[in-house]
Amino acid sequence: MQIAKTGNTLPATVEELKDFIIIRKELLRAHQAKIRAISKINTAYAAQKAALKDAQDIADILLEAEIKLGELIKKIPSQSSQQGRLPKLPAGVTHKLSHESQTLASNPAVVDQVKKEIRGKGDIPTPQSVYRGVKSKEKTDKQNEAEAILLIKSKTTLTLFVTFGIAASVKCSPRE
Image (cartoon, rainbow, N blue to C red):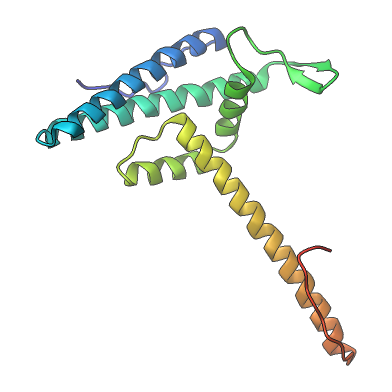
C-alpha cells in the first residue's frame, strides 16, 4: 500500500483538521501494529520495511496536520480568564493537543532535524516523539545557555582578581 504525500491538501479548518488528525492517529496505530506483527514472523523483511515506510509517511502527514493545527490555533483570538489570556479552543481540541501543535508550529527547523534523526534510527517520527525531541532540544539549549552565562561570570570574576592583584580563594557555585 502506497501512502501519498499530501502537500497542501490538508484540511483548511481547525474542526476538519481535528477529525483528520484523529483518523490519521488511528491509521498510524494500525500500521504500527502491522509492523509489530510482521517483526514477530522474522521472515518478511521486505514487508516489514515497506510497512515501516508507509507508517513513516503516515506519521509525516499527521505531523504536517498537527503543525497546521498549531498555526491555526495561534490565530484564534484569546479570551481573558482568571488564569490569564487563553485561546478559545474549538470543541474536541484539548489544551495538550493545542500546546503540542503550537510548539511544533513554532519550531519548524528543530522539527525537521528531530524528524530526520528519528527516521535515521529506522523509527517512526510521530508527532509525540517529535514534540519530545523539540522539548529535549529546548531544554538542552537552555542548559547550554545557562552554562555559558556561568562560565562568562566566572571568567569575569577571575579576570577582576588577576587584574587587581587580589589574592583570594574563589569558590564558584552555580547559584548566584
